[in-house]
Length: 156
Length: 110
Figure (cartoon, rainbow over the protein chains, first blue to last red):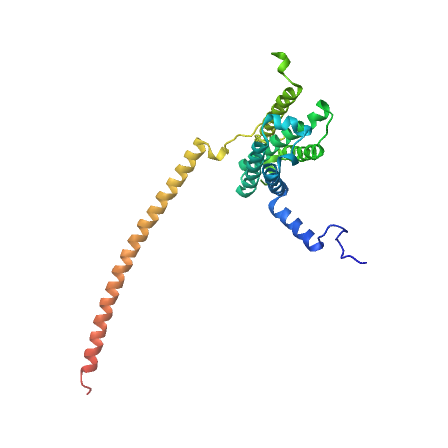
């Protein structure tokens, strides 16, 4: 079986789609592309938190985060942060991108700590905990990449 | 009562503080830094060309240019007036010449 060059098995998209994605990333910039992805993802998570049945999002592994605020409040916060991230992408100003990335960082740090704490407290791990840590790591990389002296040379 | 404080309360407090600390660190890290040259000197926030003394000099130079331009305009106006007068004189002369030519034509040939 032959595949067109540049396409990989299981990706679902051929070389054309890959070129389109690369062109889009080059046009919007890496940070804005990331913020766009995070905005959509965070809004989706917020909607899931709000509308999923309570028993789907509950348990000892969520004890710490839901001790800080109830599920619906977190859902609202996720949607707001997602909107802020997308607004930061659309606004094309350094200040709005900064607000978007900092609010994402705060949310991800809270959830990383909040989902990891029950591992120590109750011995219950949440499957999302490693994902939140990876996301926090990615956002931190962006924060420090675009911070300080490099910020002057960066297209926001 | 100390007994009412559960481990989850402590964890939640630490988590909330962690989130706030992350926001503070992120806000501090993404703050715009002043430019520093290769000698470690902080660059002036204002372009030297835009400082008040330099601006005054530029305004004085522009005023001098404007004055010269106005003088040139005055000269041009005088020249235009002279040219207008010349054109009027020329038109008058042409009219006289045309009339003279016409008279000559009307004179019967001998």
